[in-house]
Image (cartoon, rainbow, N blue to C red; front, side, top):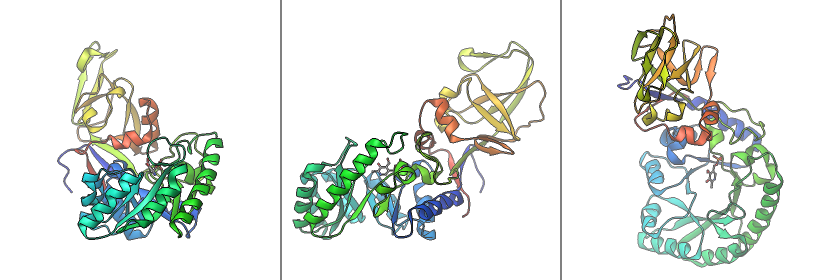
Length: 375
Ligand SMILES: Cc1ncc(COP(=O)(O)O)c(C=O)c1O
């Protein structure tokens, strides 16, 4: 494949598959696995990751945030069940029902709108009841969950198949809140199933809980960030081996030797303290190579680490190679990933940028071509 823009992401589908196998080995074959592929698979490519999971049998469900994300998967031919994880506006429901997306139902009004959408589409809608047990974001309050289950069960064209919740601190060092939350959710799920008059798919474990809270595994786990190779937080237990899902690469586009005193880039924030070689790379903040890396980031070339100098521009950045160099125009530059024995991990980006790995990979811009490793 000829890349017409050198800055690209290599997506290590084999690593993501291995992460899924490691999750399966931990949680056991009797549990189902839903993989969160929202936000274009946390930047890795929702269609490619979902296809890999479907082809290798490493996941049973796909999780999306929006109706268009679900439609994209269906149009790509994916047949696995798709759960939309948050509430849906009435105007979005017809398209969701037609695409066979399972809706998360958080209120009576939403339940009624789903029933109306099913009636209009002439086909049933599958739903899971979402209960708020401590996230404080969306979901029916736990006291009202059995009544909503009863209401859903009576609606024509609505098939209640599951009940779930979300855990806000399952990745934290202190397990107390999550333990208590899980035991409350288990009790609510039992009441919901009694109200519904049948066994439902009960689920609550995001990556933090897959790694650190076995009682949350229930009938299905819902990992996101860990399938892409990262623990949700440095404090989360390291109980399952994970491999990075993405590397970010580019090439040297321009090289020059500058005399001491030469300023580099916008704002003239870096001035060469000595004669030195400066490489320019075609990667900037419009690619997700964050501007906060200005004078703070680093890259790898030929297994060696070099500092970024000056401000990161929209489309380009500059690297100080030092007084002598054998780097040449066209050489591969690793922004994230391995080069020889050296590595820049996504966690290093997250720490330097004051954010989390989730945001780092989500911010890799669509103009950065994803190149998929075979698996
Ligand atoms: C409802 C729900 N379940 C599971 C996940 C996956 O979370 P994580 O990426 O932390 O594993 C998310 C992501 O935010 C979510 O919103």
